[in-house]
Length: 175
Image (tube, rainbow, N blue to C red):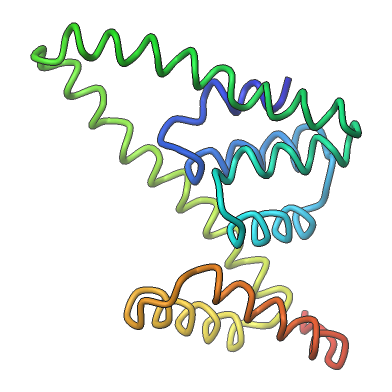
């Protein structure tokens, strides 16, 4: 049921559904911890394809095996497919009506707030794990590499995962 809700309410694409997946998986059903969710999110972002579907597949498999994976992927994608068909038919029929344009534009700031809340949660977790200095350095460094240098996010994530794999056990987390 959790991924079905994500499939129904995950407007704006995969990234906007991540806070919904987090709420269902970590907070509501407690299938995994925040740290495990962060790992799944990082790996899902490093792989090709829609993030919500990849996360649903992995989490479904982890919770219920192959049938859980099939159920989670179906529950995530089916509502979107049906909603897309219905909404595109409606938008096409009423595309010149002002409230239809307003409705589609009003979703954008809501998705932005959802992503900002999730981002702030990740910043707080980074601060807990590394302290403010390292967390801020990672945030600024990631921003510079992604936005200014144009580095692909998968390369950055792979680099951070390799760094953690090589040096992660050599130093304790600051609290």
